[in-house]
Image 1 (cartoon, rainbow, N blue to C red):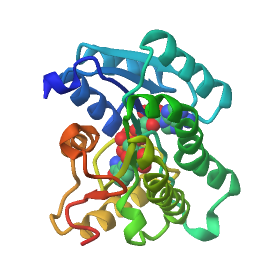
Image 2: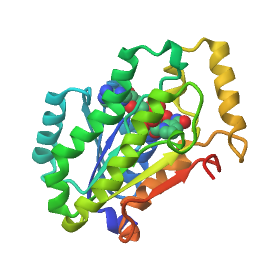
Image 3: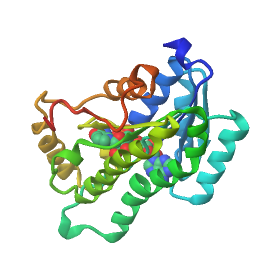
Image 4: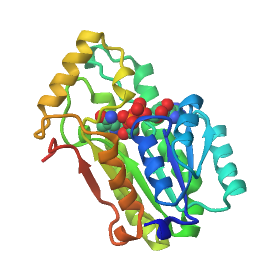
Length: 249
Ligand SMILES: NC(=O)c1ccc[n+]([C@@H]2O[C@H](COP(=O)([O-])OP(=O)(O)OC[C@H]3O[C@@H](n4cnc5c(N)ncnc54)[C@H](O)[C@@H]3O)[C@@H](O)[C@H]2O)c1
């Protein structure tokens, strides 16, 4: 594995914590050079301190000028890009009656629009390297989770992008797949507007939907992302791999 990833450049978004941090660490430990990006500077610093070979780029990916600066940084620092992992995201939990359109815009802004725009900007570099893309979607695409319509819709779009892009990008040798986690214990659950009691009820409802009866761990998601990006997955494109304890089975 180390030989395969040596001299390969991997961009991981949302890498300051949670699943993205673990993805960045597992690529770095496999020998890749990783650019970890996020708006949380302190979190990124901590990620970079946990393995060698991780550079950081701080910025809000919903801003066009940040995405352009990120592309220029990749060009200047590494001169190439082999793998793009679109992981940054936000998951509001709000009953339909209480959804604010600002919440809708924020969720689609990072989960859907930023992912689309970043992929668009970096595609020429990925075509040059015949690289690959892994998009993080969610079990919430395959199964309705009450109070998560905004989130589910924003991730369903990503699943659709992936299926279309797989057909468009194949001719230039770029593969694109999705990984759909079920509930994974990360700081994402602390970023809702739910009261502590409502949050506990939400977690209990989510756990009850998991046949394996527990939350997953970031370490159980990251290896699947690394595999999909690797040469071992050379004949896999347009696929969705569920890492969800059986939620969508
Ligand atoms: N944890 C779960 O249960 C779960 C389940 C299914 C899918 N997912 C998906 O997996 C991915 C990672 O989730 P996680 O649980 O690790 O979340 P997390 O909240 O722990 O981490 C998300 C990261 O994205 C970053 N981010 C958010 N908005 C950003 C922006 N505008 N610009 C730059 N960075 C931004 C955050 O700062 C954070 O570091 C997300 O796309 C999420 O939707 C998570």
